[in-house]
Image 1 (cartoon, helix red, strand yellow):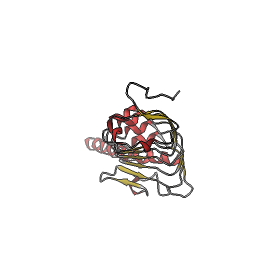
Image 2 (cartoon, rainbow, N blue to C red; image 1 turned 45 degrees about the vertical axis):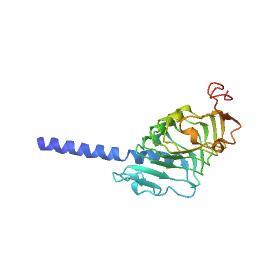
Image 3 (cartoon, rainbow, N blue to C red; image 1 turned 90 degrees about the vertical axis):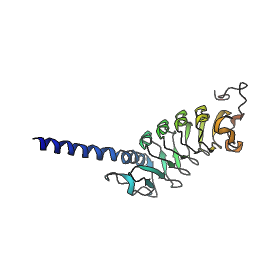
Image 4 (tube, helix red, strand yellow; image 1 turned 60 degrees about the vertical axis):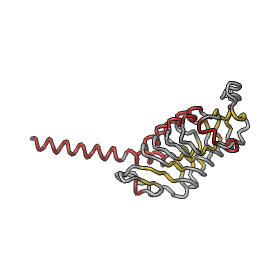
Length: 212
């Protein structure tokens, strides 16, 4: 009886391990279902595999955890999904120069290892989520050439690792932050936002001016 009990516990542990190990595959499969892929770029994304590390355009670390999603310039349309926030080891999310619509999921703020978020050159709308201010490893934030609106979240001021921010060619409003990492960001990375005011003059203008 003890041996049977041990075998049952071992079987349960293995089963749970497979389920846990495949949660990243589940999240990416959800993304695939939300996208139109006329060029079959995602053809290798087989949800029946234990993990997605053999899929094209996916990179994993030595523990078989997803660290990169490289789908830039892939003629994809559709929208992003909140399940992307479950890729807890993700460092690079590269979805630039597609035809992706909809909003940026607030759940991306859970990607604590993220270094690069490249969503430029799409048709994304809505606001930049304040939750991106939780990405304390983020270095590159390129959201230019979309249809984003609302103010630049002041939560991003606390992301000291930021080196590149580009939000040009959107419909942002308010003022341009000038503190924290924004001290180093050139003004042309904010251009062509008709409702965005010049650099923030502390105490003289509300950060969300022109946003009503």
